[in-house]
Image (cartoon, rainbow, N blue to C red):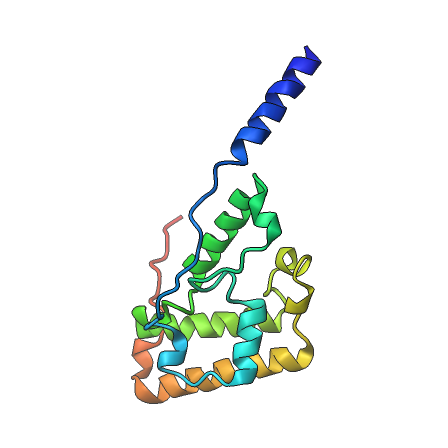
Length: 167
């Protein structure tokens, strides 16, 4: 009985190797990329490319382990969650409030060491940010937020208050 279960599991494992989700690859120009409206110095672009863009853009670098199921499904889900949270290639498609607050959130995540995720840096050792790189990213994000703040009224940047739930 145990052998039959193992054989069935092996067959399933082999079959799923041929089922892959759509790739997050866009060869087209990204007209809504953050760099189209705000300055992104080369030092920041380097940080974004090595530590952020695989999950927070429309272009993911696919390495060998994406060819293995169910790892590919898990990673694709991870990428989709990252893009839903913040997508630098669709940044300008979002309301100014979103743009302002997402950069604030990104600053906080980087400052606290929550981004890039540990699960990403296990394999991508180059994505581990030094203290100087963190400062560079945070200073850039603050400067973009200052630029936004100078252009728009303060009430347009605040997160809407959520109605309080009654106990």
